[in-house]
Image 1 (cartoon, one colour):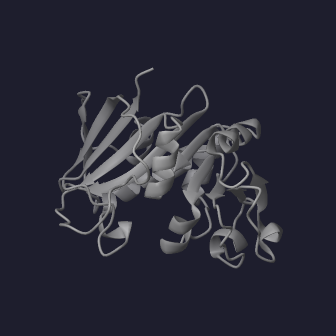
Image 2 (tube, helix red, strand yellow):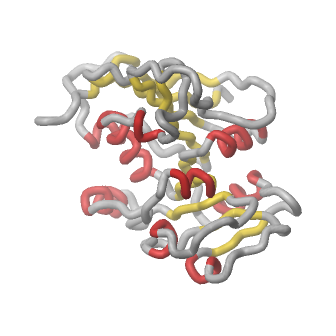
Image 3 (cartoon, one colour):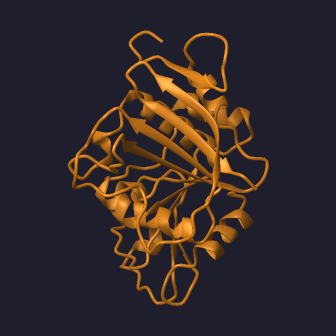
Length: 249
């Protein structure tokens, strides 16, 4: 743990000292059935970004959980706008995480799944061009793909004029990608919530007041509130909280 911010579990109570990376991963078990997990970081006052980027909120403790959640998933779901804005690189596990996945009977790397209604995607992006596993793009029947996109990704069309997320998730599960991790952005989170597709929310609360201006972690038309149950609270020595909520049903 030398040189790293100590993380401990404060609820449910746990014995022992700071958690190592393996113990952190154990706090976020893979579900026994197909599941959609959403991961976000927010400020104390609810901001989704600082100066337009989530990196301004994400410290070392959040990055450790972020890495663990990617290691645990079968597929990483992200909106095209977030992919572009946050400059996603190829979804590639390091040697330690590949070893963990191999030991648990998983492929070396998760599959990147991009949701795009417009197909405004550059095939030369590293997330596509350098991907160790061929990415998938969830889109709809009315979208026109740019030249070369089908050379670096498989296009899956669900819906006539907008992406049918429920059908898209069903196809991922048919392909064996049952444990899906969504990293946003806010409009995708809002759409998944409206369709009642979110099973778990992993939320990091950064010890920061961001002030006015930034949006929330969810966006889109309002929908019915949904009750979730707190599963654990992790706390870092720098004041960061990592919360895990799951459906009550």
